[in-house]
Amino acid sequence: MTSSNSFRRFAFAFGTAFAVVYVLALVQNLALITVYPTLGIVVLGMQHAQDAAPSMGGVPAMHWYGWTATAALGAFMLGLIAAFSPERLTRWIWMGWVWVAPVSAMIACVCLTMPWLHL
Image (cartoon, rainbow, N blue to C red; front, side):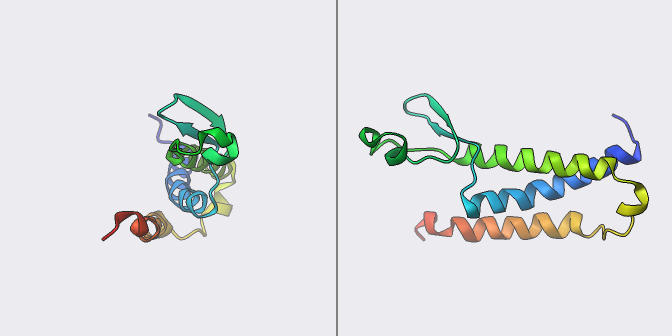
């Protein structure tokens, strides 16, 4: 591992951005792929069984992989921007975001999944 400042900026930006972009992907239903595990099918984009093929009405679709891929791609792009940005531009960013954003994203994920828990 390298300890260069650009790698450090990339790592902190990626980790923070991943949490935020994941919540956005979850809320907006932005999935790069949809997986139908019972059929062994992977399709591009956010698709429901009724949209993909009406005859597949009762087949469960799994979007978690798509949300994770969306978050990883978005965080990777933001991490690259942070890594290649001049250090003088990134100095003013408050380092507390490294903790505030993921904790807030985790709280949002818990709130968004509460309807599925049937408590």
